[in-house]
Image (cartoon, rainbow, N blue to C red):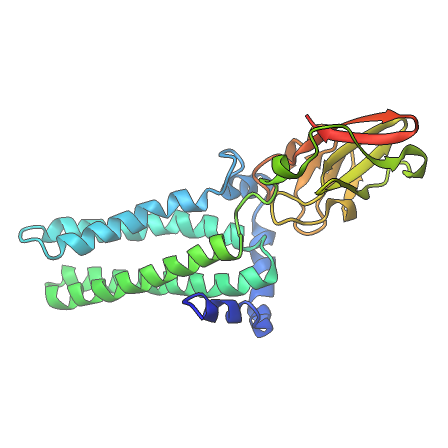
Length: 280
């Protein structure tokens, strides 16, 4: 047993879905796809949320130190206010990511968000007490708030590193894909205009036949490893069945998120009626 064990148990609490489900629908209904892509971090090529949390965490950490440095009261108060203001854009990106996660991640995410909301509320109360001249109460609330924020940050780390939320699930493809031409299917066995699952060495791939041309992508979506061979195809792109990320079949280029990076594409050729693939 370790510190993550209780969070592993929370991930299995399906009762939390009654809260998560309507919240997810509400968030998705108010976010146009273009804005959602920005909030997910598509322009960066990776999640935006971790970058934005540096401001509130850094400001609150500095305030916690300055609270105990003589003559730095105003600086500590200002940093608490800056941290509270910086928490807003961090929260917006966090909720956008949360709405496109798997149920077990969303359950833990609810606890993470509750901790962050509580920390901000405590910091606001601390700031109010300070402005009213009650420094002792303000510092006490600040210490408690910092502890709550730290706990919420630990839960966020669990989401990222234990549950793999927000990471690139296609990062291992270069180590799994064959570097030499490898047969994966007979051309005659591939139906037209239908994504088909295949295996190229250690790598699961999705094949798509368009006449004599066959396209091949890594099958597991870069966002959260959804099976692309179960997705839909239109206008030369495949849409992940889990969260709707859309990738160009020929190049793997990302057309829309919540994925933030392209899907690895493999070179293909047909020899003696066999479809062969390799990493380009």
